[in-house]
Image (cartoon, rainbow, N blue to C red):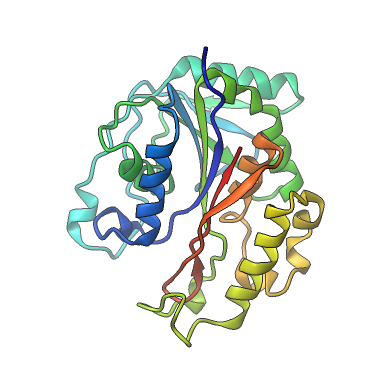
Length: 260
């Protein structure tokens, strides 16, 4: 009998976490140790956006280095996890049955929002990974419904892992500033506390109105790094615990949530 897996929301921070492990990386690794080993992973990353839901269908998804200006060793990292075309087809059928116009992309690889945390959690790259795209023009409720539609995969040994950032305003970065640094803008903690209250209370209706939250629009000038949270939440329906809540580079709240 397959154990029901939790769903996860990870704040993935800078790509440098792939080579300079910080506290959030430790939290990711601990999660992997504490969960049953998944047979496959459905990853949802802030860094793949489409007009309609899409899934990767490649048997060998490439490692995409979708960033610039970082040290050369970062661009040499390969995460050669296999794909799972059958899982992509199963998820596409589930979404189609729920009324979503869904596509499978046979060539798209895994971006750093997916492979950076996965490399820390499952360094052998031996678990098949399928990535699901976000729809940045759609709202939080749409993404919650995506998660609800795919919830049954949790009973089939599939880990739904959503990767974004609880706050993400690159204009406000303060390099080297962690949660103890007085230079952290007040809105970062204000939004972190507000969203944390809604998630831990299971109050999705309140969270759907995140733009009106304290610091909401400054925390997320664009929504793509917050939307993965709602996919993970929708796939579980509630039962959240906050595994980590640090701050990186002044403006990136690194919260990690596990939904059971």
